Image 1 (cartoon, rainbow, N blue to C red):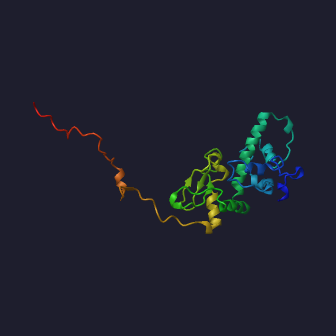
Image 2 (image 1 turned 30 degrees about the vertical axis):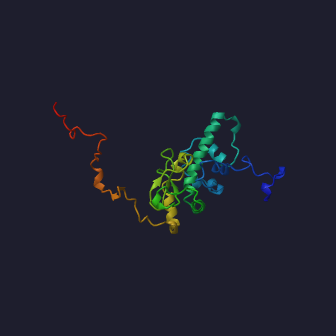
Image 3 (image 1 turned 90 degrees about the horizontal axis):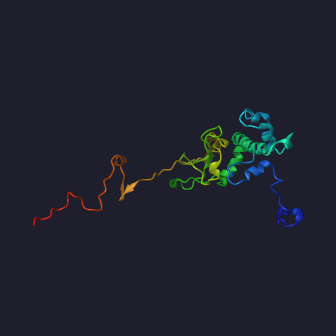
Length: 231
């Protein structure tokens, strides 16, 4: 067995307290779509340009992400600590949106795509095509993350309700399309077959939906009812 799995007191596996904030955040249930952003990328102020105006408690949130002890942290109230934790999640998400558009970020997402970590297209005729995460907006608190199918070129809700609560801005509108432009050998052809609606085995003409179908009633109509003979 590897040393980190031996059941001795000195060789216990690394606990959550010993792991980095980034590793902890990405390991949370529902955060399977995220990759771990390189700390060197986060430490470059150029990569974070403009984010300080979008995130409250920016400096504290950044220190939390990088596992740096913030000055005056001990005087913060419990409510302020909770707000900083929430701000750190938002800040990391916005950094993540930018990181996955870099060469290293794209390769990290490629590994997840290869492992089908983003799920498969629910459309039957796409034959289980692996999907990619996508946002419908680049600004936070606009919409939740969706999954984009490269085969039918449409978007769907993620299969997990936990993933469905993630802000779509943390992946942005550009990612899946830049990903497929970068790794164009992964772009599948569009489905050659469409679902054909049928009624009693016959194809339904598009105009058939314009007028409602009158179904016969269970009882006999009054018009077809015979008159009683006169006594």
